[in-house]
Length: 174
Image 1: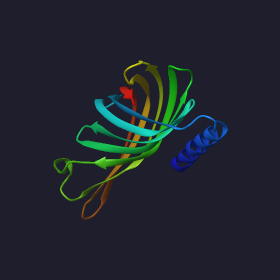
Image 2: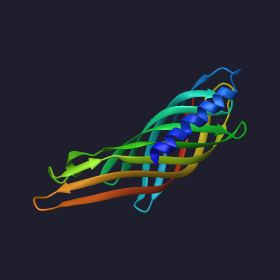
Image 3: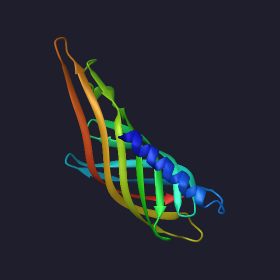
Protein backbone atom coordinates (compact mmCIF):
# COMPACT_ATOMS: atom_id res chain seq x y z
CA UNK A 1 0.00 0.00 0.00
CA UNK A 2 2.71 2.53 0.95
CA UNK A 3 4.65 1.78 -2.26
CA UNK A 4 1.54 2.52 -4.32
CA UNK A 5 1.10 5.87 -2.58
CA UNK A 6 4.72 6.85 -3.26
CA UNK A 7 4.49 5.80 -6.93
CA UNK A 8 1.27 7.79 -7.33
CA UNK A 9 2.85 10.91 -5.79
CA UNK A 10 5.96 10.72 -7.96
CA UNK A 11 4.05 10.14 -11.20
CA UNK A 12 1.62 12.97 -10.38
CA UNK A 13 4.51 15.39 -9.91
CA UNK A 14 6.25 14.24 -13.10
CA UNK A 15 3.03 14.66 -15.09
CA UNK A 16 2.47 18.13 -13.63
CA UNK A 17 6.00 19.29 -14.43
CA UNK A 18 5.89 17.83 -17.95
CA UNK A 19 2.81 19.90 -18.82
CA UNK A 20 4.35 23.13 -17.51
CA UNK A 21 7.79 23.16 -19.09
CA UNK A 22 7.89 26.91 -19.82
CA UNK A 23 8.32 27.93 -16.18
CA UNK A 24 11.64 27.15 -14.50
CA UNK A 25 11.96 24.94 -11.45
CA UNK A 26 12.57 26.88 -8.22
CA UNK A 27 14.01 25.61 -4.93
CA UNK A 28 11.85 25.90 -1.78
CA UNK A 29 12.41 24.92 1.82
CA UNK A 30 9.51 24.47 4.26
CA UNK A 31 10.59 24.50 7.92
CA UNK A 32 7.92 24.09 10.55
CA UNK A 33 7.06 23.10 14.06
CA UNK A 34 3.82 22.28 15.74
CA UNK A 35 1.82 19.87 17.83
CA UNK A 36 0.15 16.53 17.28
CA UNK A 37 -2.86 15.53 19.37
CA UNK A 38 -4.16 12.00 19.78
CA UNK A 39 -5.65 9.74 22.41
CA UNK A 40 -2.33 9.64 24.33
CA UNK A 41 -1.91 13.42 24.60
CA UNK A 42 -0.39 16.41 22.83
CA UNK A 43 3.26 16.33 21.71
CA UNK A 44 5.67 18.52 19.70
CA UNK A 45 6.71 17.83 16.11
CA UNK A 46 9.37 19.49 13.92
CA UNK A 47 10.14 19.01 10.22
CA UNK A 48 12.10 20.35 7.28
CA UNK A 49 11.12 19.75 3.65
CA UNK A 50 13.32 20.72 0.70
CA UNK A 51 12.47 20.39 -2.95
CA UNK A 52 11.47 21.97 -6.23
CA UNK A 53 8.45 24.08 -7.17
CA UNK A 54 7.03 24.64 -10.62
CA UNK A 55 3.92 26.80 -11.00
CA UNK A 56 1.38 25.48 -8.48
CA UNK A 57 3.16 22.19 -7.75
CA UNK A 58 5.94 21.36 -5.29
CA UNK A 59 7.69 18.04 -4.59
CA UNK A 60 10.43 17.49 -2.05
CA UNK A 61 12.03 15.24 0.51
CA UNK A 62 11.43 15.84 4.20
CA UNK A 63 12.53 14.65 7.60
CA UNK A 64 11.26 15.40 11.07
CA UNK A 65 11.33 14.58 14.75
CA UNK A 66 8.23 13.46 16.67
CA UNK A 67 7.99 13.07 20.41
CA UNK A 68 5.76 10.52 22.15
CA UNK A 69 5.59 9.20 25.70
CA UNK A 70 8.86 7.32 26.30
CA UNK A 71 10.10 7.40 22.69
CA UNK A 72 10.78 9.54 19.62
CA UNK A 73 10.58 8.83 15.94
CA UNK A 74 12.11 10.27 12.79
CA UNK A 75 9.87 10.25 9.70
CA UNK A 76 11.61 10.38 6.31
CA UNK A 77 9.17 11.13 3.50
CA UNK A 78 8.23 12.58 0.12
CA UNK A 79 6.08 15.71 0.21
CA UNK A 80 3.82 16.83 -2.67
CA UNK A 81 1.98 20.17 -2.49
CA UNK A 82 -0.57 21.82 -4.76
CA UNK A 83 -1.45 25.50 -4.51
CA UNK A 84 -5.19 26.02 -4.80
CA UNK A 85 -4.61 29.77 -5.24
CA UNK A 86 -1.92 32.21 -4.06
CA UNK A 87 -2.66 31.60 -0.36
CA UNK A 88 -4.32 28.18 0.07
CA UNK A 89 -2.63 24.82 -0.51
CA UNK A 90 -3.02 21.11 0.15
CA UNK A 91 -0.28 18.55 0.65
CA UNK A 92 0.37 14.87 1.21
CA UNK A 93 3.43 13.29 2.81
CA UNK A 94 4.27 9.59 2.58
CA UNK A 95 7.28 7.63 3.74
CA UNK A 96 8.85 5.60 6.53
CA UNK A 97 8.85 6.32 10.26
CA UNK A 98 12.10 5.32 12.05
CA UNK A 99 12.18 4.72 15.83
CA UNK A 100 14.61 6.71 18.00
CA UNK A 101 14.31 5.20 21.47
CA UNK A 102 16.43 6.15 24.46
CA UNK A 103 18.06 3.21 26.24
CA UNK A 104 16.34 4.05 29.55
CA UNK A 105 12.94 3.23 27.96
CA UNK A 106 13.95 -0.16 26.60
CA UNK A 107 13.22 -3.23 28.67
CA UNK A 108 16.83 -4.46 28.93
CA UNK A 109 17.99 -6.22 25.79
CA UNK A 110 14.70 -7.89 24.94
CA UNK A 111 13.08 -4.77 23.38
CA UNK A 112 13.60 -4.15 19.68
CA UNK A 113 11.87 -1.34 17.78
CA UNK A 114 11.01 -1.27 14.08
CA UNK A 115 9.78 1.54 11.89
CA UNK A 116 6.66 1.59 9.76
CA UNK A 117 4.43 3.55 7.44
CA UNK A 118 4.10 7.32 7.79
CA UNK A 119 1.64 9.58 5.99
CA UNK A 120 0.08 12.96 6.49
CA UNK A 121 -2.70 14.91 4.77
CA UNK A 122 -2.82 18.68 5.31
CA UNK A 123 -4.47 21.87 4.16
CA UNK A 124 -2.72 25.18 4.70
CA UNK A 125 -2.72 28.92 4.40
CA UNK A 126 0.26 31.03 3.28
CA UNK A 127 0.87 34.60 4.45
CA UNK A 128 2.97 36.32 1.79
CA UNK A 129 5.48 39.05 2.69
CA UNK A 130 7.43 41.16 0.20
CA UNK A 131 10.71 41.53 2.15
CA UNK A 132 10.52 38.45 4.42
CA UNK A 133 10.04 34.71 3.93
CA UNK A 134 6.45 33.51 3.56
CA UNK A 135 4.71 32.23 6.70
CA UNK A 136 2.54 29.09 6.62
CA UNK A 137 -0.10 27.60 8.89
CA UNK A 138 -1.34 24.09 8.19
CA UNK A 139 -3.58 21.51 9.82
CA UNK A 140 -4.44 17.93 9.01
CA UNK A 141 -4.26 14.25 9.87
CA UNK A 142 -1.10 12.30 10.71
CA UNK A 143 -0.56 8.52 10.82
CA UNK A 144 2.62 6.86 12.06
CA UNK A 145 3.35 3.21 12.77
CA UNK A 146 6.02 1.68 15.01
CA UNK A 147 6.47 -1.91 16.17
CA UNK A 148 8.17 -3.24 19.30
CA UNK A 149 9.07 -6.86 19.97
CA UNK A 150 10.10 -8.27 23.32
CA UNK A 151 11.82 -11.66 23.13
CA UNK A 152 11.51 -13.65 26.34
CA UNK A 153 12.96 -17.12 26.81
CA UNK A 154 9.69 -18.94 26.14
CA UNK A 155 7.66 -16.46 24.08
CA UNK A 156 7.67 -13.19 22.14
CA UNK A 157 5.44 -10.16 22.73
CA UNK A 158 4.65 -7.86 19.81
CA UNK A 159 3.33 -4.32 20.24
CA UNK A 160 2.09 -2.51 17.14
CA UNK A 161 1.82 1.23 17.83
CA UNK A 162 -0.50 3.06 15.41
CA UNK A 163 -0.52 6.79 16.07
CA UNK A 164 -3.52 8.47 14.45
CA UNK A 165 -3.52 12.14 15.32
CA UNK A 166 -4.56 15.65 14.39
CA UNK A 167 -1.62 17.91 13.50
CA UNK A 168 -1.23 21.68 13.51
CA UNK A 169 1.99 23.32 12.25
CA UNK A 170 3.39 26.80 11.65
CA UNK A 171 6.52 27.59 9.68
CA UNK A 172 8.39 29.59 7.09
CA UNK A 173 9.03 29.07 3.39
CA UNK A 174 12.49 29.93 2.07
